[in-house]
Length: 108
Image 1 (cartoon, rainbow, N blue to C red):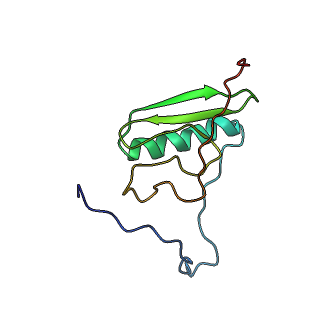
Image 2 (cartoon, rainbow, N blue to C red):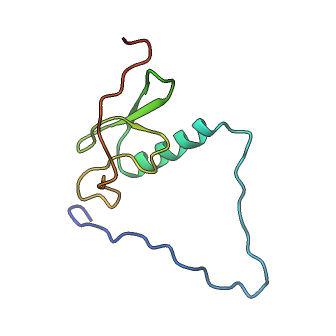
C-alpha cells in the first residue's frame, strides 16, 4: 500500500444487537490522565511507523511531545487529539493546528 492514501474511517451508528444491551470496556481510572494520553500517543505513533517521541516540559508545567521521524515537526500538547502526521497521512495536521514557540520550564 505504499504510496496509496487510505480512506478516512467513518463514525456511524452501531447496528442493534437484538439483545437490548451491548458490551463495553471501561477505562482504568486509577491511571493518571497524562499516562492515558501518552499511551494513546505511543499507540498512534507506533501505527504510523515512528519509533521515538521526544517529551519536553514547558514553562507552565505542561508537557509537549514531538514525534521523531520524517514528515513530523513541532511539539504538541498531549491533549491534542492527534500529533501532526506526515503529509498524505489520514491524520495529517489540519487548519486547527498552530505552531508557536513555547518556553522550556526554568527558561527565562
